[in-house]
Amino acid sequence: SVSLSDQVSYSAFNAEVLKDAALANWLRKACARQLQHGQNMQAVRQRSSEHVGVKVALSVLLIIFILSFLESITMDTSLTWGFEATSGLVKEELGTPTSGTPIPEHILEQLRLWTQGEVKGAVELLYLSLQQRGV
Image (cartoon, rainbow, N blue to C red):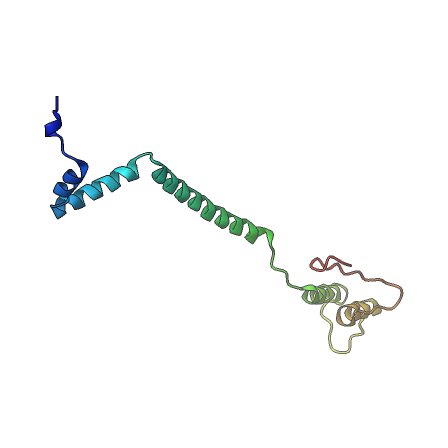
């Protein structure tokens, strides 16, 4: 058993141990390592915040990846499509027309539709704008 005369006070022990700078530095580092590997609240909180940070970063990357498939690039290609459709109609009906070949009236109406937006008669053209949510 240890007698009272053999015991040292904390301040005397602290002063004696901290006299040696190398020993004091080693003790501080050993205590810090022990605290990092322990189950104290600071270590648990630090590991938890690291896990949350990684999960948030992965979630953001996943959302960006999914949105790249859901959000299509919107370009108005109706003029190109109309030209190709009219060209296909001309090739189907006339083959390869030469200069001076008369163009049928229904093909001319198609051209007027795609260039001027007007057609003879009571044809109503509806255009749905997805961005403005209207017709």
